[in-house]
Image 1 (cartoon, rainbow, N blue to C red):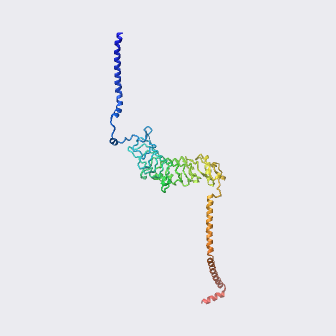
Image 2: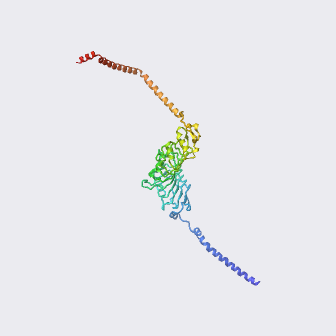
Image 3: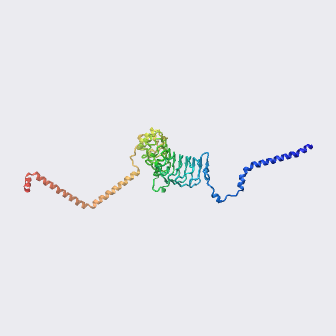
Length: 420
């Protein structure tokens, strides 16, 4: 057993040495990872002066109020109450969301950066309380394909908002899709200007948007479409005019929109489509028209449209179209109507009947006044009539006397001798 006692202390010393070696190795491996935190915990806090003089973040960094994803090439600044476009945007951004902000004004070259945002393709500025978009606001965005300005009270939309400050020398806008839904400002902010005219001027200035393929103008209370609004958009394929107040399309031409694929006219105030419009729509080779929820008036003016609906395949969901007026035709399906059903009611509407009654009263009053004037001047009128009668009688007696002289030869010779 003495051998066993001598082996115990040696084994214990060996285990102790191995433990110490393990601790040393562990401390050596962990010391680099702990060094930065230790340094940060031991180093003094930076002074305000040094913080103020710190250089701006590099261009590739994400703006503090935004969320960035380099993998998705997306920057989202949603509901951050921004009052201007962030100065630092990563150059890799392709999709930029600046929604729910307090921008108010979008100045010229609002997205000019160094390095430029050369890959920005989709820009969403909806719901940012924009009231003014100035000329050249989207300059220096050569790859911009989709722009959403919806849900902004745009009272001032520059004619050169989608081009440079000088549209005659600026290159056409690269935009393919433009969303301007629900951008109508309060009436007091228009300052006696037509909202339809403001939008039309911006869309057609300098032919900047001739490459546009999708245009959305829904929910803007449009009463009419300016005559040449679509003439400057020959490449248009999708036109959304739903939920407005359009009464007629008589003065609008779709003839040059040969690439048009969808035309949304739902939820307007259309009463009938006239022959000119029907012929233009029928001449577009690829178009699909949506006409639901319009107050169609089913009278004699609807005959041509009903016949067209029965023959065409252009209108989508045409079996859902129903009459709204007159009352006896309400909810009748247009496709089920015959020419005998579509007659013009000879009974005048109450408003027109009231107008005619008022006109009759006015004419009767004028007649009564005229008769009263004649009555009050009856003596003078009677004397005037007597004078005219006497003058006419004297004149006729003179003609009668000359006739008698010319008829009697003796009176003729006497007259000639007396002259001699």
